[in-house]
Image 1 (cartoon, rainbow, N blue to C red):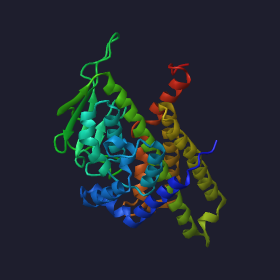
Image 2 (cartoon, rainbow, N blue to C red; image 1 turned 180 degrees about the vertical axis):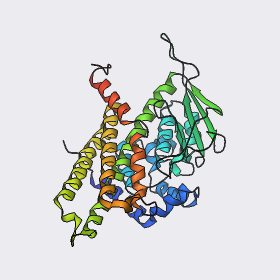
Image 3 (cartoon, rainbow, N blue to C red; image 1 turned 90 degrees about the horizontal axis):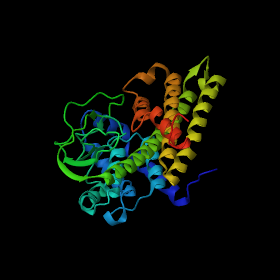
Length: 346
């Protein structure tokens, strides 16, 4: 089965590509990594004006969504250009608030997310132990359970809201990607909601987070492949470009095939939004991007390791996205559980 974007979706991708190419994102990424948010916030506003964050926000709250296919289109371009910041987390927060079933928090917070006025970070069950870019986020959402589950009962989930400076505490943890700053969540602040509906909303938000991460990873992989193809045309050995060597061609072909196999899985998952489909897409895109990163590093040689060389910005992001919002093992387990009817051992 082929998943082809329509003319409007292709035009949207082209417009984002043009916007981000003109923005020259590598200096923005490096500034973000050092704690200078000004260039990143300016770029964030331009992306919001292009409608990126409104894709996850319903029309009732000044968005245009939910539009998961268009969101996947956008996040491929964000990954292709290495845009920093809590992009996935803002989408997850928007989905969480939209699915909550309570208009108060949604009406209060979603318009600012759709317009780009506010950045969000979020901690969800199954999303990993850390939150991203807590220092930069204006809105911190945390879903937790107050008690450990027992055999007979599942404790109600709670959703807390806190603002910038009062959310996750403690020093940032090191990340493979210098532009990703991780901290432990701290569930304090205003209690927005509690109950089973919070659990359901959090599960839906996790699915959207994995979809956006998969799309971002695919974009990262495509950027790495494009940059490597250009490089092997220029680097020479024995008087000829190394791109003419059969072994190099095979490595690049393998990377291309893996990325192209991941693409229909991504857009198929965006159409169905079934958690298992999205988990499968995340595995495929994440592993393809990671394999492409390894190929890119090998073919670039020692220069690929240097922080000053732009390739490193995508190399480190490919590795970080591979485990963000669910490791390959966790996502595979979800797929197996769905296939086996609820028992991953079947």
